[in-house]
Length: 176
Image (cartoon, rainbow, N blue to C red; front, top):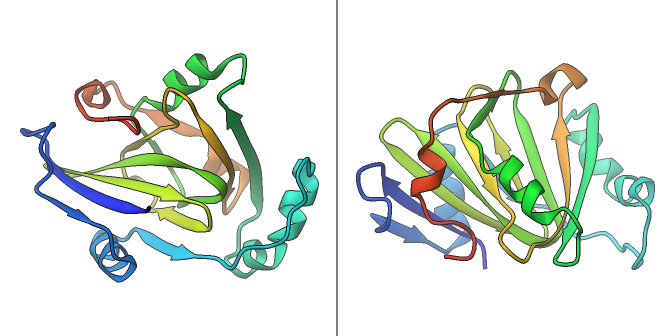
């Protein structure tokens, strides 16, 4: 189930509120310029190639104006899952809006807005659009299961700027 958990940075283990209804999630995130929507699922055969996955969602990708698309696919048997998880658990920003669409599975984005963190658990058919300059990190979990499209307006926008802030280590992850 998709949700948003809102934390004050001083209370990492206790969210101020947890929202589970789509309209509540969408409106709360929109207050900070974050987009949240659901795309209609496309039929994708098991074992589909990256090109086939991108082609299946090409109309939505084009309608939103994304020029760069990457497929991220990580399962529990991935040989480098700990390294991949560590890579995503570093706070970062992008110079352009960035988006993630979940074809399958789930993940947890932590959005850093002032003195608050918004933990967004996204899952199959969810699209999360993070505005340029918003600090955030992503958790795939200890036993990841996700197939997602990372979407950017241009190739230049997909280059992250990493924060030196160790804040990610103090907040719950996907499995917590």
